[in-house]
Length: 88
Image (cartoon, rainbow, N blue to C red):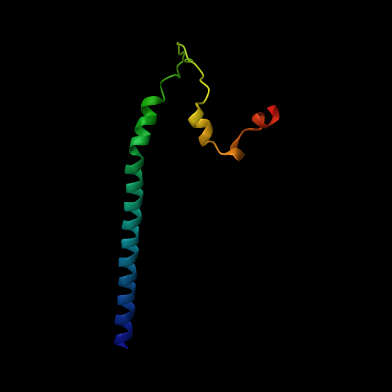
């Protein structure tokens, strides 16, 4: 009879220890997630007060060049656009 009592008490004690270990593990996971998200939260706090700037204007000249002969030769025949096929 005493064996059953001691086994029951040891199972209850082991269950309590496992419950606390699980609680500590869950707390560690929540703490690690909070520490990982801390830079994101700080960045949002710093940038939340700023208004977005207006549209940016980039001034300058640009040119659109036609592909060179080497680039045209490298292109696969089935990859030509439909615009090229319609012109033929």
